[in-house]
Length: 315
Image 1 (cartoon, rainbow, N blue to C red):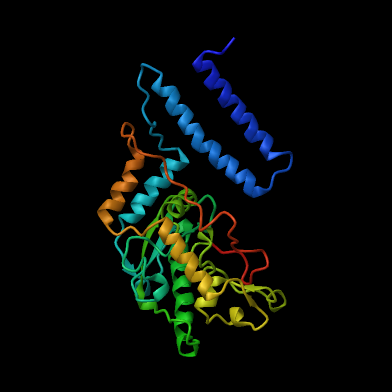
Image 2 (image 1 turned 135 degrees about the vertical axis):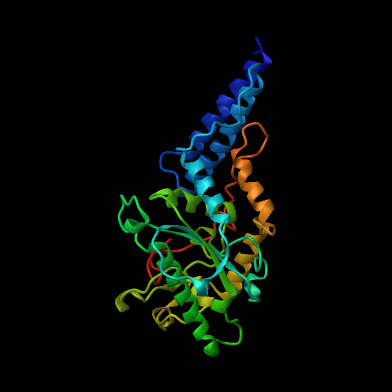
């Protein structure tokens, strides 16, 4: 006897879920685990939408919970975008930890797709000096210290400009501006993740395009490994110039990855439209899609490796 259409559909759904779990096997690779988790998360939303469509009582799209990490991430990100732009050269020491975004305003050929836009080239966080800090003084001058550190790194690359080979273009510290936001202790953790998912900044390691700007030097005995893409196209840091280092990517590969990333996540050009996009995540009744989690250039693309010079990116 044939099943009723609804029961047949539910049975097919159960069979599909069983097939997904079977495909994972007993010891699946991390790439398979990631694909399955992301795919199931997407379809979980679709299942809930279907369930709601059969309910005569309307369900709000979301419930606002100020303690929800996703809501905190959105709120802090909006507060950051509301801050004025200041030149990276004008940053001065100030108390507070939090999040920041660095923007490019120059004519470097690698960054023509984001120059002058509302898409940052890099976002990061600065953790407080004390894990339980409740005041900006207790947090320490961590946020501005991080920005000053990045300014110094860019300045070092600029100073090396006269020695650049002909196939590379110089960068100037004067072409960078930033926004910064001092926020409550621990709010920076979820805000940084939200900002990365929103913009996929090309200098962040998650984008797998041109990472390495936030790396630090390491001992000479550990340098015989790989040079980060950032140090490939913006040389100048002495520890990254070590001749024993091999380039992790070629300049052409880096340019391709940057272009492919911006094709997938185009630069935001309008500040008001960006704020509206971020506010849409709080709407309860509008049929607005959930936050997109856009993969980097490709699932098989390699990113930072453990043997890369400079240690882990400090983000």
